[in-house]
Amino acid sequence: MIVGAAWFFAYFDIVNIGYALPTITEQFGTRASVVAVVVTLSLLGCVLGALADGALADRYGRRIALMLSVATYSLGTIIAACAPDLTVLAVGRFITGVGIGAEIAVASAYVAELAPAGMRGRATSLIALCGYSAFALIPFVALFLLSNFEAGWRMLLLIGALGALIVLPFRATLPPSPRWMIARGRHDEAEAAVAECEARVGPAAISGEPPLPPVPSESHDFTKYVVLFLGIWLTYLIVDDAWLTLPTTLLTDRGLSVTASIAALSLTGFGFVAGALLAVKFGERVERKFLIVGALLVWSVILIIIGFSSAIWVITVFGFFASAVVGFTGPLLYAYTGEHFDSRHRGRGISIANGIGHTGGALAPYIVLPAAAVSFALAFAVMAAIALIAAVLVMFGRRMNGRSIA
Image 1 (cartoon, rainbow, N blue to C red):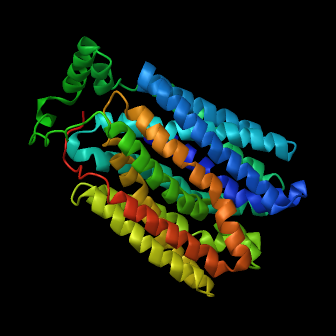
Image 2: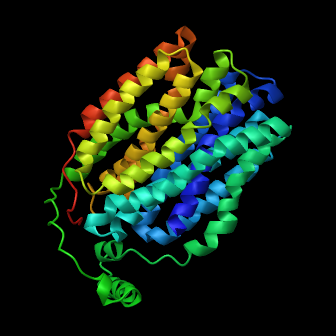
Image 3: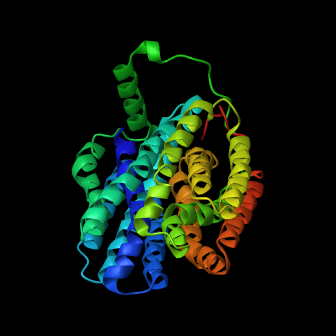
């Protein structure tokens, strides 16, 4: 709950700018293409935050890194919400991105190290479920604030700052990662941390079949899997961030009002929650590798259907399914990424792959919006093709369900 609560506010911050962009464009008297730079800077901030906090987490521990991430994205949201012009807004969103990138990368490593081998996918999915709940809530909050208040977009951005007030005090109570302690040679502290956890849950909870042994690691594995998962996250996040941040802009460019666009997309937010619930249920029952590949293939088909449809109800219904695929794939991919690195380098491995992978999200407006200028269908066809590339890359990963991690 402590990790998941922070993901709620972080995920709220990821998508709120997408709903606010048309209003910001109007109030600041600029073009949508100029305001899209704000999205780009936020995602570039994710890259920097993931790299910096991932290295810090490997060097000084997961807990301090998890506290810094929440404090950083909360500060960024306050600056962005109070911005008098586009420059200050961009600075605020960049800082917000730094915190979000740090949060996602380090939290993924932390959960991978604390969850039992047979629960890693489920544990990551439960935390992601908290984040995706924000996706379900934000269309209604955005519709209310943007429709009723001139400063509604500022209120929408400011909600993310609640993360520091609500979550930060609890982050100090998180237990350390025994796997990280062992990797740093602090065996006595690791033993004490495990003993404390065992005393808390009682002997009845310490049972079950032992996990499968770790997959043998070779010296070149770190570089190999960093390159592989960088490619996976880069392609996945082009489509993911395009779907998260651009639908309102795409629909308004198609002639719908901001209110009508948000209303049409309001149902899609519940798809994220539905997908995460499915990931919780099936993430350990079927090999994650094949679940992710299958979901990406389905996603491609859904995006094609949306792109070539002219009916709003089709966009709404299949938008729900598209969001469900994101809710299903995202947490499993986070878990699957962390499983490919050892505890000494896990924070760094995830931060490089997922962090630099966020440049894909930064590129999304420059890939999808020019295609949309040609046609609405072409924009979604491009997104579908990139999702297929991600599916092919995932096939080069290992089978990891039920295996212990080093």
